[in-house]
Image (cartoon, rainbow, N blue to C red; front, side, top):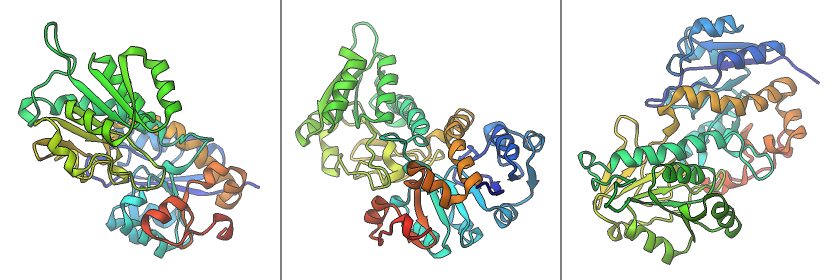
Length: 373
């Protein structure tokens, strides 16, 4: 049974976050299905979309985020809400965005207290895949090598290494911990600049697959304490790309490991949205992307794809639109019954935590979604 829904999107408030939850093409798709769309003025400017384009697609432009939240049944965003936005939420309102609650207990608490329905892009599944996380993992993987190469420059505190080397000089060594989507795309970028690449993972089947793809261009290692320590000692650039959907990232690079690393080596912690897989990591911003601890440069920007907002917005919404339309057409209850993968995306629902990994990470009581809606 179809129901008309009011959809809204607002400007992202996170530091240097220029992506936007809906493109004008997305607006057109919602409007074509009979839904109403409200867009905060200027919401898409950073990603290259003007208010005029949204209006031409059928959106109504509003002046403030408060107005959009007040009217919308479902808010479609990119990143988690900032604290100043918590009060905009109301009971039963749908928030469809990246949540990363394991690393943000205050936000989880607000969602529970507001009795909102919070659907996380990063925990929606399609079989073994994470379709709404995949495009940003692809971008973050590619960017990790780009950013790591930059911060290896001496002027930024790095070792002064050119990762691809030149004839007669040894190439730089990149170690990638985690062979998922982000790690695979990091490896592609690393191989593309002719660096020496070592990739570690705990899934032997995944390692075999990656070896088939990359051949001798990448050395694959089973992820053990001994192999991690050895790889860290040799690395110029370490890329941490470990993910447990919804849960805090495991701390595979511990503080004690830093003393093993070369001075001026760089760590890029892609897993920072889920707390980071390096014990010494803490979230940084595009304004101040790095810090140095025990002589090792850490790059831990929480919204890496925000640096390339047009590409990121289009890639993200190509994946999120399908599920957004499903929610708008059927309502959350029927949509999640019809699609188990979408049901896995519901983290908080009407005051209850409905994702088991989030519940474990935040020590919240877990409730089956079917018991709530």
